[in-house]
Amino acid sequence: MDTERIALRALTFTLYRVNPDESRDLVSEHPDFGSGWSVGTHAVTVEDKENAYSLYVGTRLVAGFGHARLMTRFGAERVALMLGSLA
Image 1 (cartoon, rainbow, N blue to C red):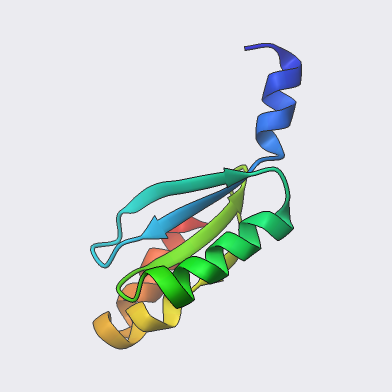
Image 2: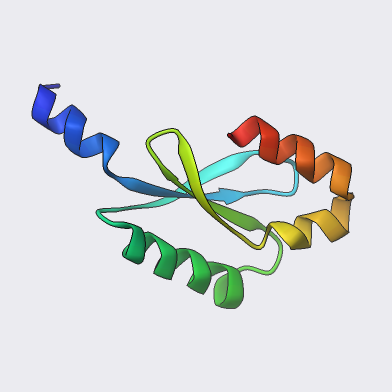
């Protein structure tokens, strides 16, 4: 991998599905925050009522969608631990 591709990869916004068992699945990659935000909000409101979503740039969490639904389902302590492990 050359330096330019590494730099471009670092600017990619990556959306992950957060499953009830705390595992994550790659959903999509986006060139900017706006497109990642749009897909994340759509997924959590229209497509999926069981999971939450997290948007990252590199390894940094920049947005979360629907994490409250996991909190009510599994308890606040478990979700706090899960979110701490994602950061």
